[in-house]
Length: 417
View 1 (tube, one colour):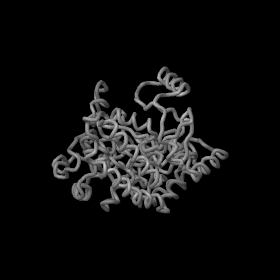
View 2 (tube, rainbow, N blue to C red; view 1 turned 60 degrees about the vertical axis):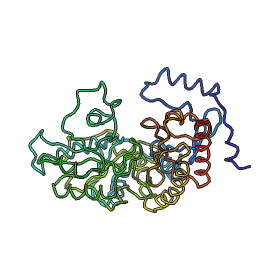
View 3 (cartoon, rainbow, N blue to C red; view 1 turned 180 degrees about the horizontal axis):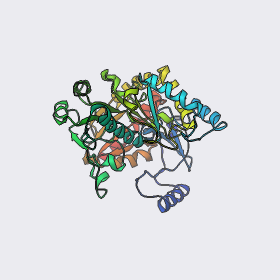
View 4 (spheres, helix red, strand yellow; view 1 turned 60 degrees about the horizontal axis):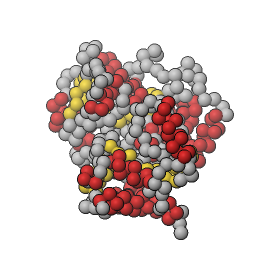
């Protein structure tokens, strides 16, 4: 009997330790999430162990923040070493790890300048400010008149400016008034994008593959056309690669699948190695040079601890092994998931080790399916009704993929009976 075989039988309800931890969380934590009833105690590689000692195959990877696996030994070694040196000095002083990190990341992106921040939403907000300032200082758009084109059903975060151009009423309802200056057009429709541009348009902000929307892959001609349109109209193309980037789709960046190079990359999540919040806006100097001292900043942005970890992440990406794993194992994941079409699954989308799976709503909601899968030892998360996102750490094995999809098939059969 293999280790995976021993995980086939799951407890049907939470134990005492789990129930106690959940009750404490529910009592004192703001209810801005609806988590599954799993209480993580430790994790390694692609596996999470709860407070009762049960093991779960993590097929979410903290929304791609844990691309390189939980407690990746190379990343953890860097973290331990940097903890013995210096962790935070603010940007009031120079710190050796920061320059090293920015140089390495700029090279990875084939750009020359990096603006380090913390969260993905901070990177997006920073890029919006940069685009507006670039529009005023470089393109000559009158102050306060800049507009930015976004895509319907986008997800770039939940800060006030970002939800101002969200299509998700849950993210918007009750949070107005909203920030003006954004125009939303259908994702995948380059003609609609071109028609929305006027003389005051400074940028197009787009996810190469829409994650929160259900891992939506655009038509093959879309991103190349967006690139051409932005160049023709002197508009910055901003690619939000916070979820899709850093090897998740089988390439370093999702844009690479279409040989598209944006003016600005937005990176985050996996950039911190699953250890620390770290994000970045990466562009050429003529774009980021519009920022001057005092116009933008972050006390923790680019701190030595995060920068050291980021350098290790960039070094690991430079070897190409994680891109290769995502491409190779992603083909197996998608093949196995597609065998479920007609057996409770309606559609499977995605690239690499990233899939959106539409489940027949007649079987139940995505949340109900996620709960049942957790009982069988597989952790995924729902989005938009009956769609599941599958995004395991890139260290997952073929045998673990097969085990997870087998549990998925069993769960669908159980819900159909």
